[in-house]
Structures are given as structure tokens and as C-alpha cells.
Length: 136
Image (cartoon, rainbow, N blue to C red; front, top):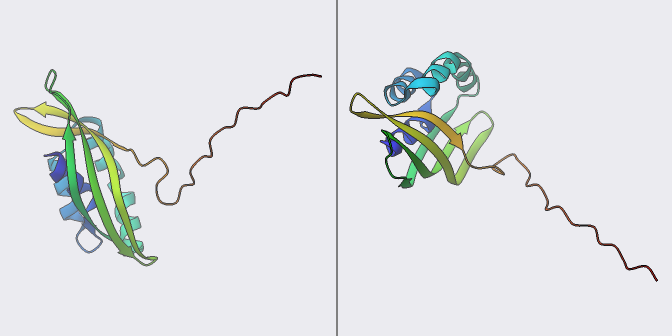
């Protein structure tokens, strides 16, 4: 289920965005479901304007132990996209999914992108500790 959701949320084609929307909403619940549905108009406009297309390929899924009908999954994937700004390839992306069992079916309640210094971001240099020379 985590694999299907990650693929659904990052696979889209500006010519058929309803398919993407329905796929994501069918696998989500709670706050994520509500937020995605409310913000889809903006995403749709962006993808249409930029002629956005993307395909996600899931490489691995790690799932925590189930506790009180909740679990966490880490999904590792590659994402290949294209649009008016050209092509892009994002390799080894990590998404953390919060899973909740609803009426016997697992659904995603939250998604966090774990790629802190991903494409377009600059890694923060490590802080150096100032040294004090001994007084003579």
C-alpha cells in the first residue's frame, strides 16, 4: 500500500490529472486527504502551466511495527519528470508515510519528504567550534 501511494502521489501527467487525484485520494485519509483535496487546484494549475509529467519508481519500502492500527513506512524511490523547464531525475528520494488502518484498509494520513538537502537546496555547512589559543 505504501508503494502504491508513493507512486500515485509522484506519478502524474498534466493531460490527465483527475487520474492522479483519484488515485491519491483513494489511498489517503485524515489531514493529508483533506489538505490534498483542498490544494489540488493549485497543483493542477501548476502542472498544466508547466506541462508537468512525472513517473515515480519505488525501489524499497521499510515498515515499522504495527501499533494500535498505525504504522510508519519509509519509501525509497526514483522520480523522473519533464515539463517546460526540461527534464529532471531525482534518485533515492525518501518519503515517510504515516499509515492508519481505516475500516480494515491501510491509508496514508501524513507524508513527509525526508530529502532535506534535495534538488534546489544547498546543504548547510557544518558549524565550526571556535578555538581559543592559550594566553602566554
